[in-house]
Length: 159
Image 1 (tube, rainbow, N blue to C red):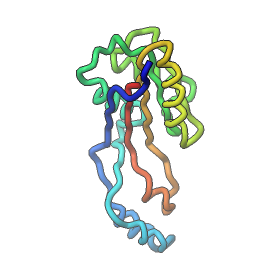
Image 2 (cartoon, rainbow, N blue to C red):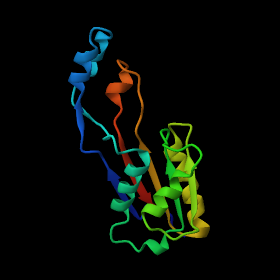
Image 3 (cartoon, one colour):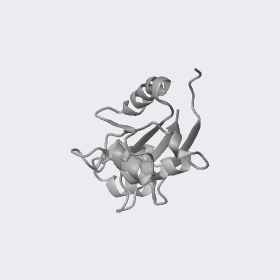
């Protein structure tokens, strides 16, 4: 059986924040930020989190695809909104995927997305196509380089 990407999708929040504005605001504390002050970063709105962005990426990925073929929904993130509730299950429900499909959250590492893809490719061999979403709404320290180098968004792959 051939394995690969059947479909892909993405979501970037509409809000943008100019990196130069961030650097100017924090220049008194960390002047080195001016070196990173080019372009803009995506910024999730108050009502967006990693789950809602994953749902949007999943919708984009599954456009024109029969959702009944999806055998699993995996979600990777280091910024899950829920610690005691399965976030991938919420994504599967929001996308109207079959109840009873396998859902898995992968976290605790910035490599959670690639780990999720590896697990999904193994599961696809025996179960059928798996939807893999990776989504982040990173919280960063003010005046840190991460504040300028990260952005919010989500990606989805059907494998």
